[in-house]
Image 1 (cartoon, one colour):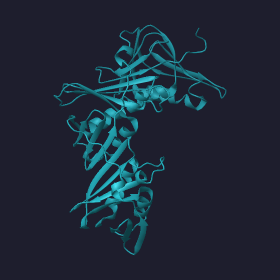
Image 2: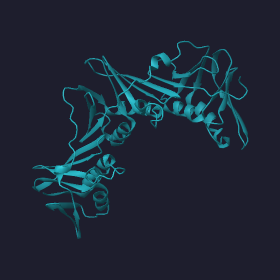
Image 3: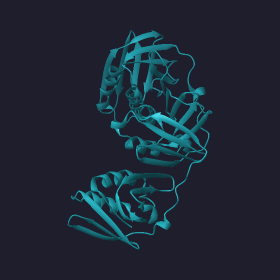
Image 4: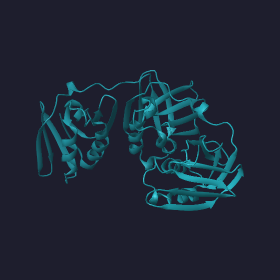
Length: 371
């Protein structure tokens, strides 16, 4: 195998593909990047048996072939090169890398030992605008569980596809985020759950300059493939009983609050300097007389602050984890939000004022003076 390509383009591709290269499992093959050359193209693949990234770029290919090179070593070499072009040549498993005056000779692995990537055949096709999907993800991913201590299935983001509608759902046991968007889809109803890691890496690869382009999504029984620009992201899907989130959403409320989103965020954030531990020191929120009053007490001290709010219904005093509340408010993309309460111990709904495009649910924390 022998090819020459632009050093910067190869460096960018390696940086993205490296996200799928295993650094925790001491299996030499999946610690590497699979490099394959066709007649005029160069393909790079990283895969850790659960998540993979493949990309193609243009190259001048003198001799087609394939090799696996340790991902960290290969990426570190390319990062340090200053010449505009790079040539990679193999002789068996010996790899010669040349760029300007620099020459590296390292040992690769036979490409035949690299695991085969899963394929998705007969799946459900979906096309969605890159910027729309990115926004939907940013408004739901914060609520996806980080660890598998509760239910592994909740470490993924749930996709629900129905006629001309896509809904994303994230939950971690303390909060819920639901985001709905109208899209062009005329297939059958389907749901699937994508691991949080996969979604995070997908969002990193989306180029803001290509916001008008679509992402192609192919869904199979066990795997999913996202096609974005010249990248393919392959991932296993999560299986299990996802929370019946519709049953968890309160259907009634006794207090409704309309509040400026940024004012609410700022008011809560001003309490943070005296909060030692979010889990032990909830913020106390009192909604009454068209005012949101925030207070908290810790070993460090005490703080009280307030901001204006339009309140209808019963007076309510309730405790929150400040991070959970600010995460939800920061995910709102409206100047104002509607917050619905049903007493001090029931989940709280945060929504846009005039529609239900997004819905965030936050569980309250019990205040010390409550029974």
